[in-house]
Length: 136
Image (cartoon, rainbow, N blue to C red):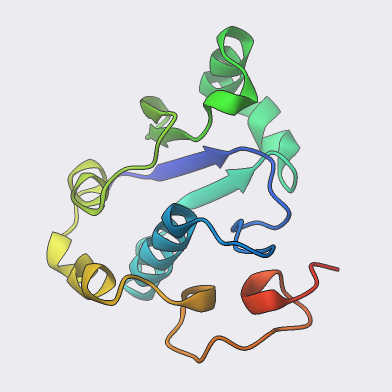
């Protein structure tokens, strides 16, 4: 199976699921990645705030940022090669790029995601940026 890495703009927390209004696309991506992890498929996800060293250590990312700014992130790599810039893959593109059965993500599409990438009710978590936590 191929290995995907996602390099994102600076965010308040690793998933970007924080603040008063959550970007539905970030929620979808977080839910997809959580679903993949439950099926044993790991995807690296890094944002400029929490993992700046990973950006510096990854040649494709430093090359990209020398010609584009961080505003052109996210940058999606598969086995070290750039696949997308400026947007996240669709669910079908995730399946095609990594090489898994897209049926794994059918429940994600039907549900539209949930807070904190779980089926739990959306309640504040004091130790997390998710669900109204204070990101401290």
